[in-house]
Length: 166
Image 1 (cartoon, rainbow, N blue to C red):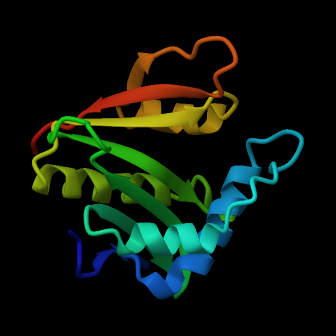
Image 2: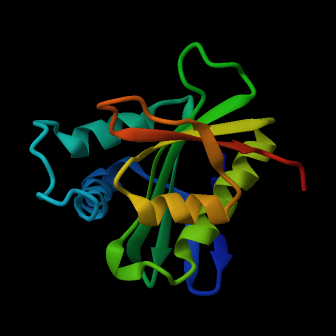
Image 3: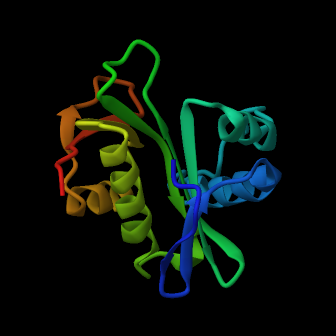
């Protein structure tokens, strides 16, 4: 697990702290709102509590990207229940919309890959909202490919990445 700071210029990528759950939930909400044309649906979740649970989960990783003392990106991943041990699922990956196209996403993705390699992962999976074409293009640039196309009424596309060694 990345426990020490990883610097890339003024950007620091590190393991998230439980005390950052509310700030992470706010960034998560801002990013998700961008791909819902009718506004972010009310889901009734206590997102700060959910994020705190994920951060504290021993088998999960939550990385955060911080620039000039401000949270600008997050990534959450783990091996999903009943998945092969060498497969990791990227459950959440968000860059604050005001910081898109600045390289934060690419740096955060590189930190994820670094951790996956250290953990012996060979395959990564993720689901991306079917209407989120910007994110799908980002993942394609990082080497992700469709694992399966959505069926009728599904809201996500599943992508796969082969985690190659360095």
